[in-house]
Image 1 (cartoon, rainbow, N blue to C red):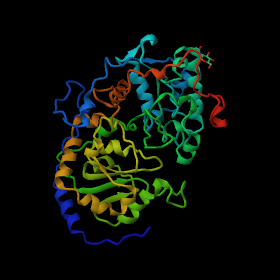
Image 2: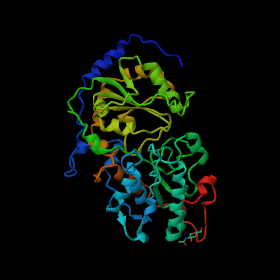
Image 3: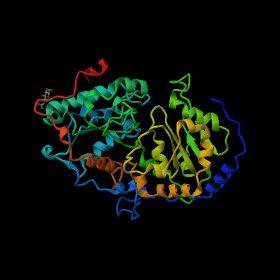
Image 4: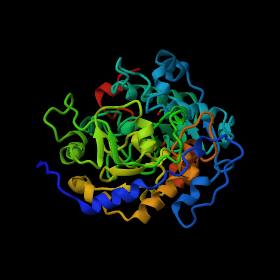
Length: 425
Ligand SMILES: *[C@@H]1O[C@H](CO)[C@@H](O)[C@H](O)[C@H]1NC(C)=O
């Protein structure tokens, strides 16, 4: 990939200078006290309208009581599960236990939820063990199917599962291996609530709900700076460009997109990009106009959440990505999409965005509803990511008739899948 020399860029410089004058709009609102709810104008006429829908009264969820080995014991063994980017599976459980949509009567439930922390069995380095997650899930489903009568009525089609692993219920961080496994067979009729989203991919099945990864709201709050601070950085990115350990030849990691960012723009003064992760990372995002959100091993990363929270316009470089709550969050209005093949032109693409468009995106990003929707607050707040998940589930009701099986009818094949996944857990 030919590296381009620096050249003078008059229009880029102008746009950058103008943009630097932009003042950040408040990003403190999503952290404001839960009540009273901040009053603000609805973003009428676009999909952002449904961000404020209230799911209460529109669905009832039955939470299966599982043996502790499926959830609490895993968490007790490794508390890192509460802070890593897969933590939504734990917080969703905690949220549902006290949520007004919970019902204690399974006969009136619209949805059944199985709290199994499949991404909480970690390596010493803190990564989910890819061969454990499918066994945990398969074992949990077996427990549910043999303990209560509800699974067998639908083979899981009115059940939902949190699967915030890199490639969702394919449960592997490497795409090839994830594709090889495919979605765990026993989960193929269930609704999967997952961070992974890419169109036409075997690891995203029809009817799934794509959610934001977990990023600690409290930690982000402690890094808020004066919202009047000018945004003096044009493009900001911190992270890997190459993954030498897992991709020594290059070109496979991030499908080469991150390498192209580095090779084309490492010397460009408009680009503040590096592998160094500074202590001021969150503050820097609040001083930046554009924050790069390129794919890594998977299309998604916590940067997307951080950019929205800190009002930095996300520059999404991940072809065919399916974004979190894309039926509710107007991603096309708050972010910039750049095709992976266009990375070498990233500088002119961003510099040629009219100032009015930049301002409009910043204003939309400043809307507290937008930030709230990507955060898993403790305790939950109206409109936050928990509520967006419930809204997504409510929108799938009533269940179509095909969901319910005839007595004795079976659709799933319990013996399908990798031999290693069929081992007991
Ligand atoms: C559900 O069906 C399986 C066989 O497919 C059976 O082993 C299990 O006992 C059934 N569950 C209940 C609660 O009857």
